[in-house]
Length: 215
Image (cartoon, rainbow, N blue to C red):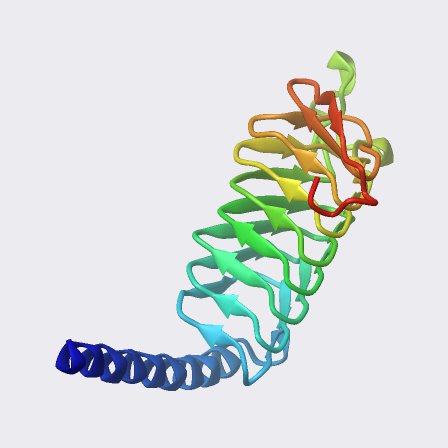
């Protein structure tokens, strides 16, 4: 058992050192390829692949982990604060500004941003779609015309929010701190703090007692 434990310990150290070396090499390669369009703190763990298209910009803060593919399309400006964790494939598209605060986990999340999308500290956002735009006008007679300003409105997801698997968060929505969006929900209107919503359209199913953090 002692020998096995020693082997496991040494193996873990070797893997950790290789990941650090890979991160340093890949970081230099990314900066060489994208120049001023990308800023990556030296402490970021780059275990996956980053791809920037056209005129987009990306900033990644200290302690963040890119564990899988992160793609940014269009001319979006994306800021990942400290300790953001990108799990599985995350794709961001548009020409707006995306701000992801400290400690957020993005797991196979898709973000369409033509104006502004913000995600608060320590939130969990699963596989699904967050979009601040309809892309097209609603009325049938102008649906193929250039989109009017009203088709886009900022999205704000608060702190410590959990957006479950398969959710769609639509334009103009604010989700209050500590709330949960149940799997498969479509969020068409804003959600207050400290509640659980679920369904299509998402409706209130539970209210947390925020004075009791274990509820």
